[in-house]
Image 1 (cartoon, each protein chain N blue to C red):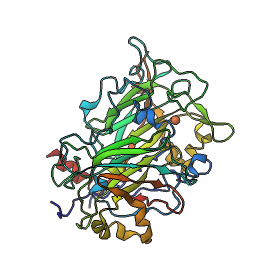
Image 2: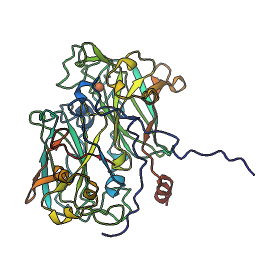
Image 3: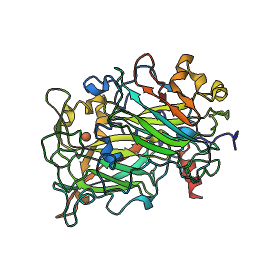
Image 4: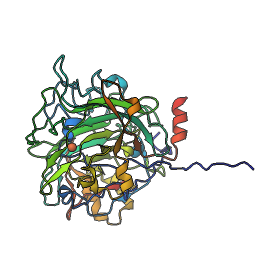
Length: 208
Length: 246
Ligand SMILES: [Fe+2]
């Protein structure tokens, strides 16, 4: 018998989050807030080029607090697959995504209106953990003053009714009426999607 | 490709008792911004286990030196010169290489270069307040800056933020995305701060406190603070690392 020192499976704990605060723009979008000359341009402002494959779309929306007021200091990041459902990521095991599509976008909300806006493409479908296909979706991560841990949600598309009807994530919802909180409205390449942090229309947020 | 069974890593679930609470009324801004309905969980898919990558070639020479990256030629920011260094690792202790870190902070007087900041402390014309770097193969990172000043903020009648640096971290997966704040060892404002106190566990708060590292400090130049960052780990971290090494 040898003595074996057990190795803990999980020796560290994730660093605790703290709010991004009201000055998140300084760090993440410095050019947007007037700090010019440090970086050539803010990251995540261009997801597509004229070589990107797929259907061009714009997604615009706002994030509302519990009083119905749009957050003007919010910053959102999105992450999505390319038109074939592949992610432009070293962690993508299935193949090489469209090199002309980053899949990642970052947008500070307009400081007057609170609107965020992304020019991107309609994502392809990505399998769920059991192999079934998920409906087309965009992952979003939301940070702001007053948000202590970044919020994860998704944008689906109202005009993908057939795919939405069998989406494996939607199946998890105890309250099916909440599916609509994740559906971007519109079509023909132009979608709007508002996010509600609280209230009767509260958006579904995920523990991913 | 479309129907292939994904080899998605499963990230250890976030310990939401360890993280700050979403609804933390001592921090007034959280009251109307905290979701009230339960989060919905599902097994990770590739949408969560993939994430964007940023190359070292994106990083400019002065990006990780906040004392110089906004300064006029020949000038530098005013304040106590410090280096912050550490490693980005996952919960299994594996280094997380080649991930982007972004930093932002107030100047030495506690003032941010932001139109929303109206604190009476002056701006420093040679300090912008942002920096970034990409971790090395061993997960290590470093940046030079000035120690930020504490500042008052409108919450309670006399609330002050301890000196802190905001840090944004990408992992290898969108599920690892994290923003946090780094505090400084010995700062008496830490236990008084309503934002710090959104975290309930003192052991968790302690993980956000950088330690003075006298051995690494450069004589006649700058003090060094040590701050390690831990991202979520996954059950297949080892396997993935081996794959990438092939
Ligand atoms: Fe701050």
